[in-house]
Image (tube, rainbow, N blue to C red; front, side, top):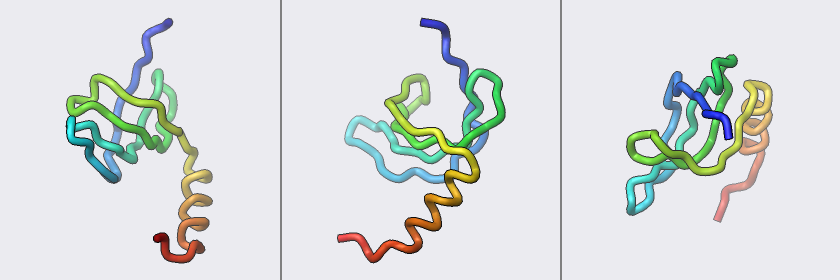
Length: 75
């Protein structure tokens, strides 16, 4: 498997933290030198390891925000 290169450009939000210190974060990330995209995934405390996640364009994130704003209160 080829090396995956990434640069976290900006941390937008930390949504949760596990007892082992892994954090679910919304970040702006450049993958393999490409233009940055919004990325939601779990990260190890030092950002050396990551869990599976989802990468969103600015348009995707805007549409998600609209959908969440239109939802009734959760729980």
